Every structure is written in C-alpha cells, then in structure tokens.
Amino acid sequence: MAMKRFLTTAAVVALAGVAFAGCGGNDKKESSPTTGAKSGTTLNLVATNFKFDKTTLTATAGDTVTFVVKNDADSTEHNLTIEDLKVNKDVEAGKSAQQTVSDLKAGTYQYHCEYHPSQMTGTLTVS
Image 1 (cartoon, rainbow, N blue to C red):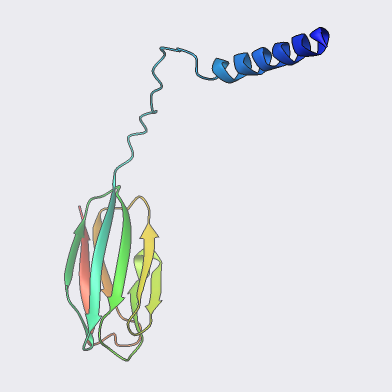
Image 2: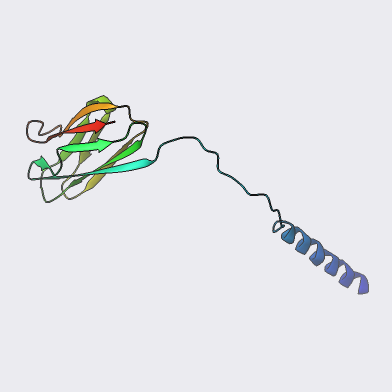
C-alpha cells in the first residue's frame, strides 16, 4: 500500500512539474516582425435610387482596401465594378457585399454599377 501511495504521489508531482514548466519565467520579449506593409482601409458606398452616395473615393498607394457596398432601400440588384482593379461585386437589394484589393497602385480608377453604368459612376483616386 505504501508503494502504491508513493507511485501516485510521484506521478502527481511529475505532472505538476510538466504543467508549471509551461508557465516559466522567460523574460524574453517576443517582437512582431516589421514588414513595412501599409494599413488596411475600408471604403463604404451606399447604392440607393440608382446612384452611389459618393462619386469620389480616395485611398493611399500600397494600402489594402476593402470596398463595402450596401444596397439600401432599392428592390434592384446593384454592383460595384472597378475594372482596372478586378473588382466586380454584386449586391442584392437590402444586402451588403465586400471585396478586398491589396497593394493599391497610385492612379485614378473609374467605378460603376455593371447593371446601371450610365447612372451609377464614380472615381477612386489613389495617391
């Protein structure tokens, strides 16, 4: 019986040692690598009554940009197309949709609704 108690106690002490080893007092500070990458930006557009709420958007070259389009109060499907950035996102009535573009290049980009291109247009300027 004494041997069984000794082995049980030894097993508990060994397990406790393993558990506490993970909580060690390592004073090394972990650092995040600096990549020089630009921050992310969200550009919001609302499509309503066959027009976008903004006809001009701006962004910074090198940024990662998420375009969010909300189709507000229309019963018609709309779309955001920016051909030079390969953005082509449909958004159903009452819904939102998004598409992300990484590492934007400086320039001027035209955007429009694929379904209503003469009514719903705008310009994105990246500098």
